Amino acid sequence: MSLLLEKKFLTLTFFNIIANLTVPLTSFADVAVLGQLESHTFVAGVALANVLFDYLFWGFSFLRMSTTGLTAQAEGNEDSKESFQILLRSLILGVGIGVLILFANSYLEKFGFSVLEGEKEVKSAGEEYFKSRIISAPATLCNFVLTGWFLGRSKSATVLVATVIANVVNIGLNIWFILFLDWKAYGAGIATSISQYLMCAFFLVLLFKEKDRFLQVYHKIQIFSLKGYTSLLSLNSDIMIRTLLLITTFSLFRNYSSGLGSETLAANAILHQLILVGAFWIDGAAIAMETVAGTLKGNNNSEGLKKILKMALLSGFVISLFFCILILLPSEILFELFSKSKPVVVLAKEYGYWIAPVLLFGSFAFIFDGFFLGISEGRILRNSMIVSSIVFFFPIAYWGKIQNNNHILWFSLSSYMLGRAITLGIVAYKRYFLVRQESFS
Image (cartoon, rainbow, N blue to C red; front, side, top):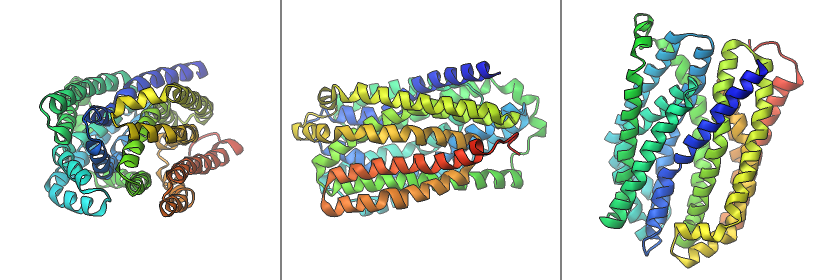
């Protein structure tokens, strides 16, 4: 059994890493292609607009996280009915929230850019990007659900194909719209929107192939069960609070960066994109942890989960270490791919080494996230994030803002990742290692 679990974990990790390599390419391509323009204003503008999209889109990424864990538990218990109920209820939530965002988009834009700090030209570029990307809201949220459902069923290869297709199209459209049609920030947003709808269509085609399995249980499914939605929303509320605090942390970091000037904001945006790439590498193991943890909870196999958790922690650290070495050695050449602005490249190189502590500490935090998401312990994740944000991040970040010091800002982000790793690690050790447990009940 142990060897089978390890093989499953490593297989899922491999496919997840390959799939995740393409996920940050959405914003990576936006920044890289816009960086080929003469002005760094467009890169800074997209970075500013992405603060809003972090709240509007990633704020609802609980649709992916909760769907993965709950589906994995249903699959581990061989409950097809529950698996499809989770999918349909989550899709209804995703479509509903996405449509509401579309209706409120003008108010969200006006309020968001009135709060964010930035130079007039930077805000103008950000608003153009916002207008063209906001139309992808329903597709983006449905993609969260569909990605989570296929991952929960251990179909990482399916997610890999969907993300590769969407992001290759996004990159191609970015080049066409920005460099050839000169649509600048607006073109970057349109390219992303088209790629999201294409990804959603691809998922729905694959979902249609599940119709025979669905027809076997459809008469038992209760889509509009109040109890089912209450349970789903209870878990989602904890994960949503956790995610909103995560987004707020990075948003404050970027907003404080904007107070240091557009060049520093652009440099930090480049480094942030690289951290996102590294985080998605590590998330290959973290998402595999979610799937395996959920399945093991469904099977009531706590001993197997402990073994996989140890393996996942080691895997995450090795992946993060390898990524840091790969990125930091040729740093200046890499930064020049993102921007033609020499001052921006110089600043990115000066602060680039902060990528290492952020990702090395973060590797443990990400794996523990996957562990607790898989067994649907949203409250633990919420509490850890509250402590990490308020104690480990905000006081240091605010100090950096007052001192007008970007190194202190980066130190606050490193401290934040360390706080997440410590708080989650303590709970995991006390609850699942210090005391021997025979079951999850």
